Image 1 (cartoon, rainbow, N blue to C red):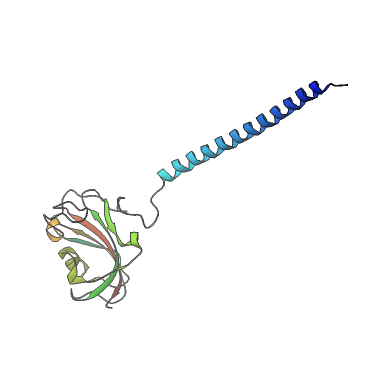
Image 2 (tube, rainbow, N blue to C red; image 1 turned 45 degrees about the horizontal axis):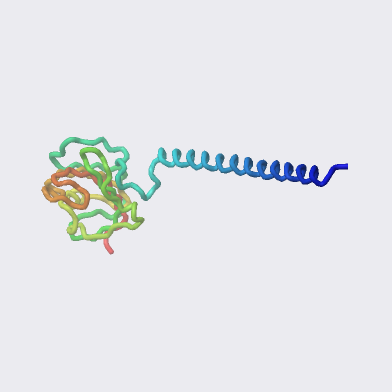
Length: 175
């Protein structure tokens, strides 16, 4: 028969084996979780920004221009509702504004999820001239020379003397 000393040695060996098996299992699980987190981080870094996070990204479908000499308007989607005829009309729009030189978005109403409502007379000259003739439901791209934007004045992340481009969706005319 085994002596008490032999039983203690056998029990100690079993306990050491059990503890080392648990420690090895935990180490493998922790390593697998860390690898998954690293893979998830890499995947997130390469994805396009989520909707509502446009600031700092590039304006879709816009080819940057070095200089803008005159106001340019392009209807991306013609509207079918009421038409803007006066700068006194209040408008409700979604807009995305970018620098014309590289297409970098500096502001978008889509980031806040809030449509922008203002009388047309309350915005820059390029908007005032570029939105006239738009119809509700339409989407227009307006490329604005600096003189009809903010000119030599720096404005909320827009460098002085910057030509701008805006994509504007007209939701509603009037209050």
